[in-house]
View 1 (cartoon, rainbow, N blue to C red):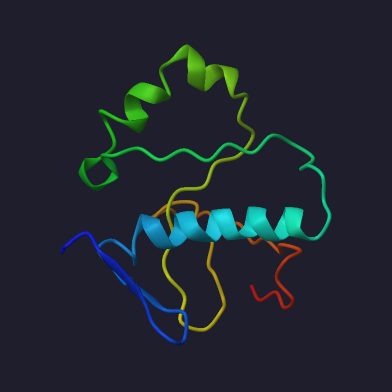
View 2: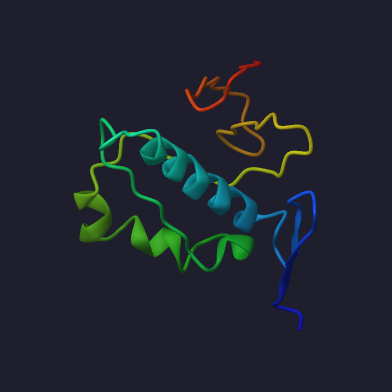
Amino acid sequence: DPYSAHKDEQGRIYARGSQDMKCVGSQYFEAIRRHFGRGKRQFRRTVHIVWCPDEEIGSGDGMGKFVESDEFRKLNLGFALDEGLASENGVYKVYYGERCPWFTFLCISIITKCET
C-alpha cells in the first residue's frame, strides 16, 4: 500500500511524505502535546495549525486563496512558519524561507539545549 506507514524499533517513521510536511506536522502536534502534558493550561496566544493540499505546486489554489479570505483575516496572525526538514540528530532548524537571507533564531522551552 503506497499510503501505509511503518514505525521501526528506534521510533523512525517510514511513509510517503514522511520527510516533508508530515514530519513537521507531527513535530507541531508533539510540541503542543508536551506543552499541555507539563500541566500548562493554555498558550499566551492562540495557535493555529493549517495544512493546505497544494504546497508542492506553489500553494496558489490552497494557501493563496485562504490568505485572501475573511476567515484568514480573523485569525489575526502574528507569525507564521512554513514547512521544515526532518532531523537525524535532534536539532531542528527553523526557516523563514527557502532562499531568503533573513534568519530567525528561536530557543523553545521544550528543547533542553539550544544551538544557533
